[in-house]
Length: 384
Ligand SMILES: *Cc1c(COP(=O)(O)O)cnc(C)c1O
Image (cartoon, rainbow, N blue to C red; front, side, top):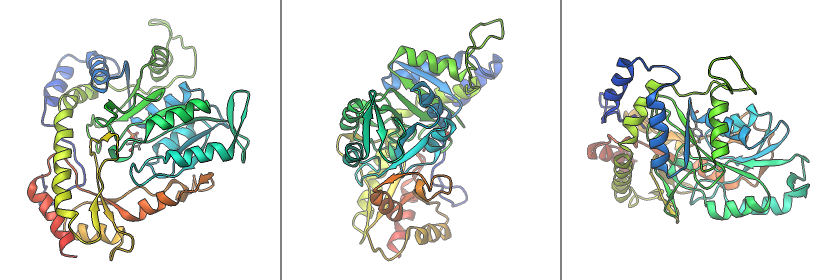
């Protein structure tokens, strides 16, 4: 869909029963922090994702923060994270007083390169009292946050084996991969906990929102407890630990129910549109559309245009050229070790993440995209 001839990068599709469910919530007075839509959204989300438990919360960053707390990440611990990511997981690590250690990505998944992770663990860490410590900083490495970039899954099986061996807890940042399958299983189910986001640009949205999934009943109970102010009594104001007001409000959960019903359609449309782009762009010199890595059936949330090394225009030049044509595109995230607050973090041979940053551009991917929109994007590239 183009608005006044403008093609946005990614806009929500609210064409299902969202309005009906929100109207129900408003009519019944359930607008705030509890309500039947929250409970139903959690149940249906868990069923969709093949997870035993799902706990709704106010956004994806809060989901990651609470997951780190549940894994026992303490001040001065370290958490392994990708250098190429949206900034949220690193901020969540910082909220815990812990330090990120930045790992490189690979070209097939755009996520953590598991071979490099293995060489980091072998060469840069030592074992003490059953935990893994960083040789350089002497800090304990408590957890890792593999992030499934743009809907491609990290190679989770070998990553899980390594993390079991080194006693490192795994929290999946699956905020971009709702609907993606790794070896036939939805993402977010391999680690101790998985985190999702329903921000406005994600494959489904509640305006703002998030979800924690887990297959462990203790973690699920703790996640619910910590995201709802750690209350222990329904009448007395009794709380047993530092809690968080990280709830998802009922009226937003109602939107989520309407969105969730459309997830299969969203994934089908995203996959079909990717193939349309691919057939028209891969034949152009120096350009290609990135596709799913082996073992993954991607939700194709975001489409990546890959520029061959030495292509005649930079990613930034292309953003401007598209913008002149009323088409919104964006570079992939700036690398975490180039941001001022994370520049001093240890980073381990992050040369591929730099290549990806320099060569990848996100192009319009809304589910409302028309064939004419796709042709307009392709024609800009043809005219270069
Ligand atoms: C969207 C996103 C999040 C969470 O974002 P919120 O806006 O807090 O819901 C976390 N990690 C990544 C990689 C994301 O893209």
